[in-house]
Image (tube, rainbow, N blue to C red):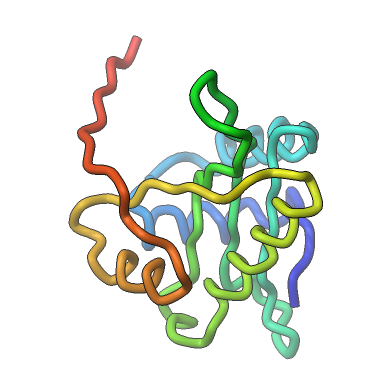
Length: 144
């Protein structure tokens, strides 16, 4: 079952982010970001997948509206993560299909995402659901 994100999802999302995406951050940061970003529905979109029998959160997607001077507005996937014990059950596909439907409802022209170079299984998944890689780039960060 798909539903909106809740503050009570904080710890499960923190664990999924650490295990599946490699982001080890505090529960307080995850909680604060859920509060802030989920309130900004014009720019951010969240959906979680919950197992209907156990009510366990099994995965989630977070996208933001991507706008630039060189492209029509799209959704940019910030995170798509499914707990490893629930891989290969179609959860990621359902989350992405719901995101695509929301993009159409908002009049956006598509969905874009970045995926780490070594995440080859994720790349296969995205290709399987109709996405294509059209750019190679490096990411640069300067923490202040």
